[in-house]
Image (tube, rainbow, N blue to C red; front, side, top):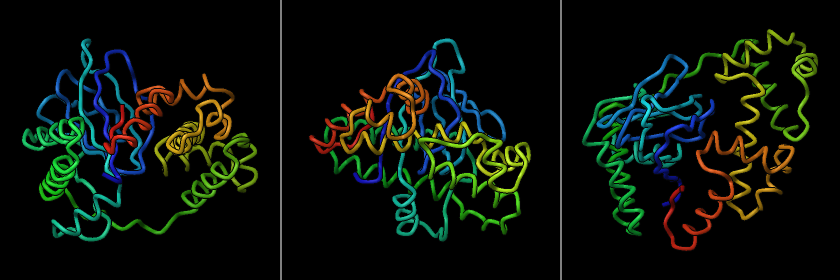
Length: 269
């Protein structure tokens, strides 16, 4: 099932730090309550709801009740969702979801059914159910995303800062140095970057490093080597941030990926 990651877990004390995904997030809580903190407020996900987060939307999450939450989440790529929209809906252009959470028990059951089929090694059923649930959610709750307005000076400075941080991920400049290089002031750049990407530059850089580390782990790079390659000081530093963003330590993530590649099932731990 190319273009799809899956995560099924129960968390009690774990908190996901602020981050974003390149693709979509479709989550269905089975027990408990998850508080998801989005740019425009906090939503509470409970059984019978589906959380739908569009690509590159910054968010964090933590337990909404003392007993935590258990959930099943799908992470389909933007390309996979766009292909389903093209084939099964009237939506065209860049598609996304109008709301971040809906009460939709049928779709929540389908999300969990995708997991069950994948865990049983039934790729045909998992792929079929995935397409059914994504098409249903798009038809019920999807929309064509509005075109972006022309970039203002602040947005252009933020984009330039992002490019610098990606190029110099292992040795990034300070905020003052970055602002000076871009002809801005530190506070002006900080405000512009947060407005454009929903988080300050240092938080965004940590998220970008974890993304890069995931790609290296997927190719078999050892966690210690991946840590240094993406700019973390050592493996414990990677472990801490990777776990807070992905939900599992890098070693466990890599072992599960290696196992699923071997068996043909695509599933995150």
